[in-house]
Image (cartoon, rainbow, N blue to C red; front, side, top):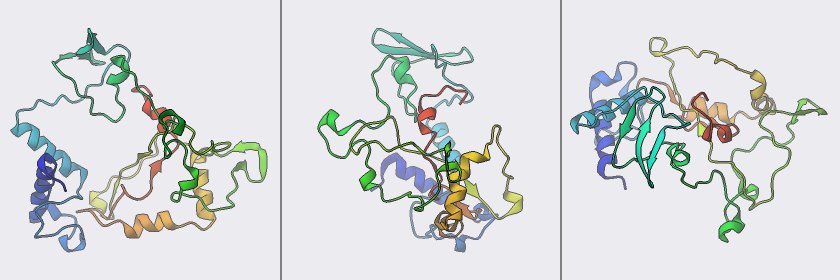
Length: 261
């Protein structure tokens, strides 16, 4: 059950899509997740979520500071055993009686000298059974059998493709891996509501060779899921959040990387 502030958020989203003008690039009848008699709506465009959040903080007198980033080298100012202030890269300092780190990466932890761990602990650490590597239980996100793993097909001396490890660790052993980050996209077939994809700086097609070989082996499930299974969002043709675009390789670097990453 979803209640409290969370439900209020989803209720406000529903009220937004109750208005005809919210469907300028689509038809309400095409959107399966919209229920006229429901009091809340749980699938929505990112800009609508931002609009609702801005309404909530404005109504409650919350000042939101944008465009600032924590100085990761010396930005957590500690007095005794408490964080007294935070310094940004710009040099601005924000003081407070209490600080809540609600980010994904938890950048206040190392700055405050708090002990923390990244990754999956082994079963042996806490005498448990389902921690660490669980290859035997890995039923999803599997590649087609027989895909050549070498950069030059058939040539082991050429090295492994990006994204392939040399050998899995034993089940139950620990490592530094965490749950994958996900690319969350909105895609549309309406040209006037679309921004073209741009090739990012440092793009290397070789990083996706494993994906190409998976398709060559006859795997089309991901493509079919992206184009036919995702329920259309309002004004867009497909959602990108549930379409198996998890980045399962580079998350280890992202978690403790600097702001330049």
